[in-house]
Length: 332
Image (cartoon, rainbow, N blue to C red; front, top):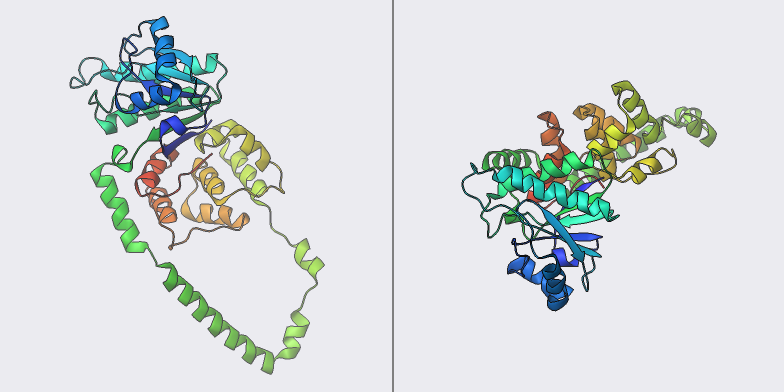
């Protein structure tokens, strides 16, 4: 079900269907629309659009993708911005909802959207983004599909100035350079090594008596990440679907995690911990079950930590921040 934010050229997306923000007469436009027509084959795509003839504002129609990597192109007509008092938000939401349902009707499992109406039609980018996320998220609560929101550069996708400044300050206050961390680890190891040498010289008998067999160690293994995860799900009274949807991960990936031998990525573990709305200590404990931790030498980890301590558990909102700071996003 994941919603993924990517910086890419939509014409190169390897998905079942891409969305073209178009005009009511379905004529080839400039910018992204022109690129879609050019790569698909201008004449053949325009002929397919002409056969349909017209698309109302807020509606969507579908054609083959022709020479594009995508099998289909969905054409949707977004609203022109007139200040927000002319029903633009409802029309824009309809663009996403109707496109998604049309893709579902044609058996598509993945779709890539541009940020509709945010270019020539002058819809404010942050408002356009909020509407896109709201409409897509509502659809994904009821349906399984991988949805990409494709932006060409980070300027098209920015946090509010206040939020950006708050996160930036948190990173500046807490970020520890990797080299510094490495030096501290080496210094700590050196100090511990010297202590161990002294200990060995003066109390070798105590060391020998403290040795345990490998079988003893294996027999004391703590619960796995999978066991801890499902213990938390039960404790919170949640359904599995509640968790994997809030974590922005695919149902098929989630099913693999039920196997105690499956080792999920750190990205997946953090996404699931956030979906459970655990506090920072609880998240660190859960990550530790999979051999991971949050580190002050990772800007992505600090951004995640910032949201957790501020009780902000909306993973799409967290991904907005990660994307803005050019960090890998969570989920999927």
